[in-house]
Length: 416
Image 1 (spheres, rainbow, N blue to C red):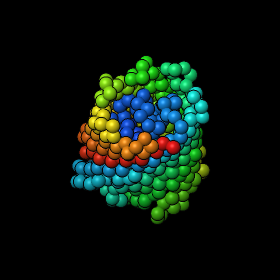
Image 2 (image 1 turned 120 degrees about the vertical axis):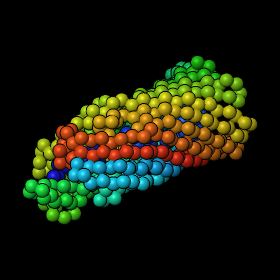
Image 3 (image 1 turned 45 degrees about the vertical axis):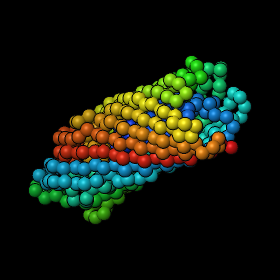
Image 4 (image 1 turned 90 degrees about the vertical axis):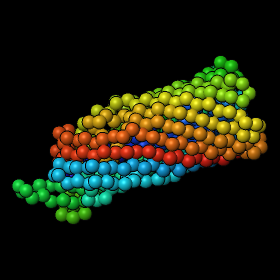
């Protein structure tokens, strides 16, 4: 029974980290880049927040600069027509995904004409989902609350007049609180149910690489790579009632995927600029999940079989005058989860982003940015047959989902 809980909960941790680049990974780390739906994020270099997507862009910024911003992510996900292995149904479950703020901070300092350093503080992963404790899919999940905080020191080097390179170290802390129902058959036709909770955290390190090439002062291309991060989640599992003797410590080795990004930026004239972006997250590395318990070394094996996820974006900017700039963007975000393996923790689906942004430059030192995105997701289905490895005790589950997201971002940029 504890095998059931730990498997379900840790799947949620790993699945969650796939967020708004399909799932709930928080791509939204720049109000200015968001205005273009992150088109050209690896090449734009319009302010130092673009260093999240490519550290090499720091060489485009002189002196010392600071950027402070936040993103309010307001998703809405509804489930209906849910039915489980035991014939229990839930007709309509509203707003299972809760809104949250994602702050971000950047600081850069130019050491000389060749070298610029920087540091960022981001929340690149995070979500809160909550179902009623008695809903039909409770054995697959009721509460998921996950937060990751990442500090990234960076350095960029201007190798030639046209080429810059950059690197950063991702120091990432993850904390998860997860809850779901547990069912154990104790005799034919007689089952015992309990509620179980998992708490766990981990601190691990990865890296980031990037390059920026300027064909002309108006045209540039950027490329970047984020490494996989090998996490070892340490935590414990606890039950509310009669199953409390099954409480124990657990651990799981999880590898978050690498990602590749390439973007282009081109100024058509002194008012118009266009940009494009492509990224791929290598989720196909996530084929299964092994859980180790303090009392049970081989606690669980779960097959996942996720697929690589692609993101495509195009955008344009229009400089209204010396103070105001308008941004627009459109993106297609592909899901990493196929129909056969989708769970109620992450009812993920393909989505389209519609973005707009507005910049106001108060003076040479102070600039403000606003960004807005509406994400429309395809309708999705959970269709778990109960025949995957590890699903026997959770059973089958069917449900229909509708998902959409409103995102509001703001930032203040100051040049010393």
